[in-house]
Amino acid sequence: MSNKNALASKSCISTTIIALLAIITLFPIVWVALSSFKPQSELFQVPMRFLPAHWTLENYIESLGRGDFPRYFANTAIVSVTSTVIAVVINIMAGYALAKYEFPGRRFCFTVMLATLMIPLQVIMIPIFLQLKRLGMLNSLWGIIIPPAATPTGVFLARQYMTTIPDSLVEASRIDGGGEFFTFRRIIVPIAKPIIATIAIFSFMWRWNDYLWPLIVISKQDRQTLQQALATFVGQLQINWSDLLAMTTITIIPVIAVFLAFQNFFMEGVTAGAVKG
Image (cartoon, rainbow, N blue to C red; front, top):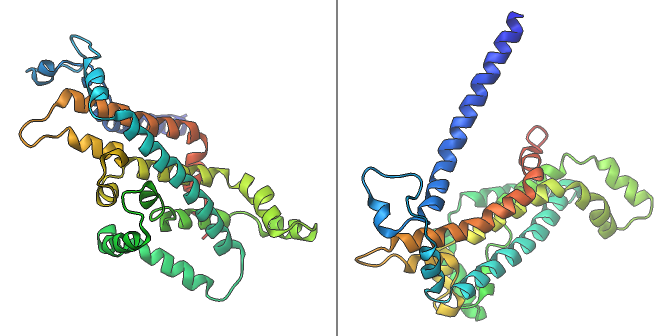
């Protein structure tokens, strides 16, 4: 009984700690969402109120009416979805090749790919910018989509997951006459759904929240993304906090929706390959 009581107390403590961490993590998001329904004057009341005293939708109406919000939203959605699809395809194929194919220099390629994780964007942004200029891709959504489409992180996660898939499945498919594309599409892809979902979540989140690279590539207003539009809400002398909070809440919703849609696969994809490398 003492062992059961000790296990129960440890479980209770762990659950309490996790719950507190979850509350601390979610509090800023919830506060932003609730504050977006407050009038401007209520945001700076002392003492501060967690719930709005007077609920209003004026902040959303004003923020949606400023600029060309539907176009900014559409640009961001196109960039995020297209880049995510390309990233998933490239990363999964690269991870499969590095995990299941034997070719000279395989380990060297994987090591070099991992080494690029230590290179920050600020180091390579000028060469990439000049290359995009030569290709005529500045002020184009493709200039935002193509450069970060395949990431070393995605290839690493895909490769680590692929190593957990038994080689016997691939060999059996080849013995039965299945081609390489058939094996990849009908055997590997269905098994790799967890890591596909994980890469999709990461890629969508990175592209949706990206500000620096679109700021460098895009100068035309009709090609701007939501993050660039958010920056326009911050004036030099004054900030309209109510509208800014409302627009921020709107931009958070798609990221949360994508995560909830793929959450069943997320943890399995992240932890896969942690033991076997």
